Image (cartoon, helix red, strand yellow):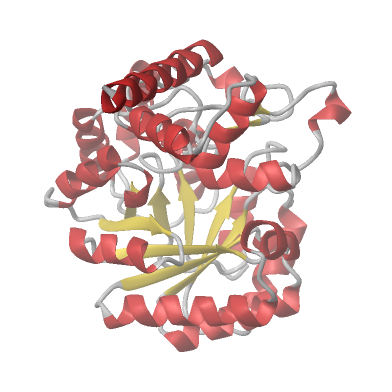
Length: 384
């Protein structure tokens, strides 16, 4: 067992947790969650992805002003604008992520391996020049060719990344495969490894614990296991297991776990059976704009298996995390004629209303009709 003497926990309730269908935290709720997590003693708190919406950006700005012991980190694409957001907000850590599997390179980015490596190098170097501490995440690492993944890890380390994270994006790993993956990377890199596990087969906690036993320094969790589809390893399960089963030295206040869990239950009203693997209501649901965009090109992008195999189908949820492609898809489905302006107007209106956690077909139609009517009236006025 190669378990680190100092295990770290990164909580992603405010970012990944808010990607649970039906969940949207208010600013005051996020402040409360951050304080609870800090008092509990997590090492990192992921404050969100600033580029998603003005609401999230302004909330991160507010959260960053909170005096915390936990390290603050934001989520970011390999885009200069995303990196600039982190710099302007003054958050010390940035979590750069990039899909590294062949399908992601082809379907999400339309890039070959050479150009992908160059993008990774340039983005890490740019973030480092701007004074940020960097965690680079290989999204879909579990479906990435191992030799290419090692090449990415070495490149990221050389470019200045402080941490390298392996993401089991569609939740297909099991403990033996986790050990195999981690062992391959840990022997090649000097910087600490992180692990991001999804619970599509109910193995997220087991995989997170196995990753730590195999030498990973930090694992991602959320309160109550919230997250896309079936979520992440629950904070309570991981930390209690590390304390009781592995006798890990730590400074976590386990007595606060029930209070945090009950608070999240109260404000989200999310029934755990909804994120149950395989049969849960949300097990094939997607709402993050980047996820939906990739799904529309290749349905296996963010699914561990075809829902048809289970007599099910995937669902696309529209809320403040949505993107242009999801709205375009919905308008086509509703047989509403659209142009770029209409899509932009609808996306902007949705992001202005973060309290709405599911824009139904009826609500989308009403929005479209409002903007179309306004355009017609403006055209009439200009003629007159």
